[in-house]
Amino acid sequence: MRKLEDKVCIITGATSGMGKAIAEAFALEGAKLVLSGRSKERGQALLTKIKNSSGQAIFISGDVSQSSTNKKLVNAAIEQYGALDIVSLNAGILGLGAVTELSEESWKQTLDTNLSSIFYICKYALPHLAETKNGNIIINASIAAFKSFPNHPAYCASKAASVALMKQIAVDYGPDVRANAICPGPVDTPLLWESAKAFEAPEKAVENAAQATLLKRLGAPEDVAKLAVFLASEDASWITGSTINIDGGILNV
Ligand SMILES: NC(=O)c1ccc[n+]([C@@H]2O[C@H](COP(=O)([O-])OP(=O)(O)OC[C@H]3O[C@@H](n4cnc5c(N)ncnc54)[C@H](OP(=O)(O)O)[C@@H]3O)[C@@H](O)[C@H]2O)c1
Image (cartoon, rainbow, N blue to C red; front, side, top):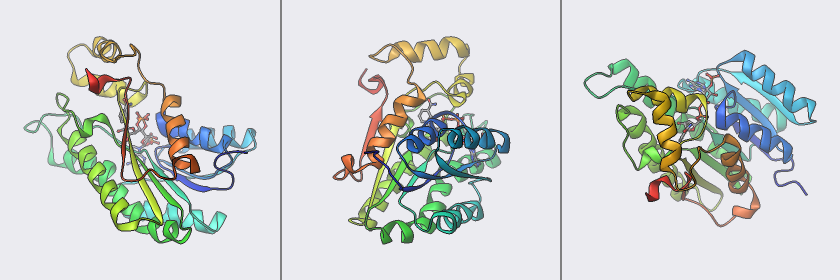
């Protein structure tokens, strides 16, 4: 029996990295997907891949920092599949720069993309999630919610706040909806390599990050996708309001 058979799921950040791996894993487990990202080209490529392996999915391009995009994603799930069971929120940007260097525009864009987008989609999705009596929200936060990195103030602030928002949702919407946050350490995606640009020697910084883990490697997007499948499934039916680190042990060092 597949773990997410016929579950209707919105996945943001599905055009790259962890969101893409989660989309592929959810499709293999039988979920019906609404995929989100800005890149139409990468969205279309993912759609083709999922459909070629008999998965069910639609792709809707748009900027999740805008409330209207999030409303559109929820409406699409209801119109296409008639219900909404799970939202997996992965869209994220870095907005690099120390406080005195960061423009107000970049600060706002980072907070809007990483945090306000979660508020918007939950605002529209929660009535439908609650209706199923078994709704499920999985936020891709970061160990940056608990740990600082050079030149990442907007990112770290947005991630800490997204964890706080997740806990609040778990309080306000239980028992009908579960909400949890995945907190990855360094995972090998385009965003990690972009993040390394905040360091003097980016390649060395990525290698150092891998070696700083207890398991001496970067995470793979698929490592995180396996955790997302677990949290989305009935196997995790008594887990809510939790932050789950998946970081090769780096926070333990
Ligand atoms: N990689 C890491 O080491 C790491 C560690 C901890 C947490 N995280 C978090 O994990 C999540 C996924 O990151 P990733 O590493 O997989 O990054 P990634 O490969 O760069 O993917 C980021 C995704 O977010 C989407 N996105 C960004 N801004 C958007 C916007 N305004 N509207 C719609 N979609 C937008 C991108 O879509 P388009 O490209 O189509 O615009 C892309 O699909 C992020 O929230 C990130 O903060 C990453």
